[in-house]
Length: 233
Ligand SMILES: *Cc1c(COP(=O)(O)O)cnc(C)c1O
Image (cartoon, rainbow, N blue to C red):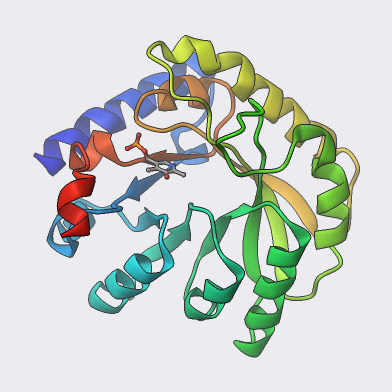
């Protein structure tokens, strides 16, 4: 099932790149395995997936210990400062930085591990009250502050678009955040680049790619529906 799903997604990604006049190599698929067992993640690994996303530190760390060292780990969920120390040794990219205090904590633990951790700034582009992320108008100010930290490197922006039936409804949000990223890039801030734009999930990743996504985060489309009741046990 996973192999077929990945094949279908690959076709969709290629078609979206073609429509947008983009190279396939500009887009990275992140397999979001939250609530799913390591067996299923390893199936995706066997099909060639190397980038995996999780939204909980404990779950990600447990899986990281069990899976191949060639796996790259993306923290895509809200991150509490007291949990940063657990992922600092191994995390590939943190997509969900939305406060200076969190960035500062990441920087401290990165330096303890003699590394610089790449991060994205999470923008709440639709201004949904239920969502984490910084408001678009406050993003540049936060990035200027985070850029001063020695242990982190800002690599771009991330957003979680609203849940919608028709992905076309999110196109204008994707366009807005792409424009924000271009504006920030134009400011040439030291220690900041805007090479990554993480946006698009199972329901809307093709539209996100058409609007400039460089990373799409797909869970359900690869691993099937999540059963949260079962995962609680
Ligand atoms: C769960 C999750 C995804 C994947 O969602 P699907 O709709 O299952 O593809 C992507 N991004 C974030 C931040 C998530 O928490």
